[in-house]
Image (cartoon, rainbow, N blue to C red; front, side):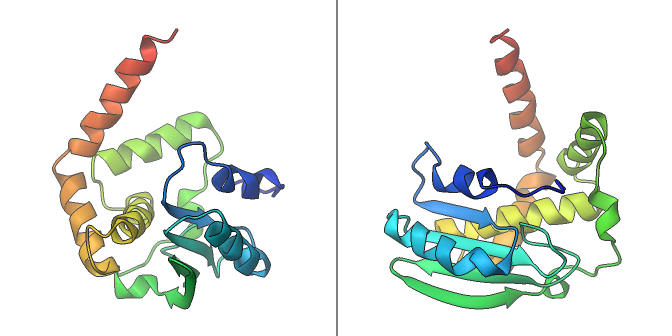
Length: 171
C-alpha cells in the first residue's frame, strides 16, 4: 500500500499499451471515479470496473465494501461489492501491508501456495472481477469459484515459475 498518490496512479491504467478492452482500475478516491469511468468509455474500453474501497484501497477489498462503477459498452452501472457476501472475514487490513520486497514475495508465495489468508482472498476477489468482466462467468460468485479452482490446481504457481525462468534469460 503506497502512501503517496500521484497523477501516475491514474495514467498507468489509462495508457495501458496492451490495449485491453477489459480492465479493472482501482482509484485512490471516489471523487475521481466518474471522470475515470467516462475516460474509459471515451477510450473505447468495452468492459471495466472502476473501484475504490471504503477502507481506502484502490482495489476490491476484503475488509470493507468497495464502491464500483461498472462500464458495459457506453453505460455505467453503480453498486457496492460486500466482501461478506464471499468470505467469512476476520482479517485486518494490516495483514497485507508490507515493508519490503522480501515481505511482498512471502505474501505472493502464500497466494501461489493457496494458503487461506487475507492476501489470497484479496487476490482471488480481484482476479474474479476480471473473470467476470471477460464474460467467462456471469457473476462474481461464479467467477470467484472459478478462480479458487484454478489457484488450487497450482497452475498459477507454475505460470509464475515459468515467468521467473523466462525473465532470467533477459539478464
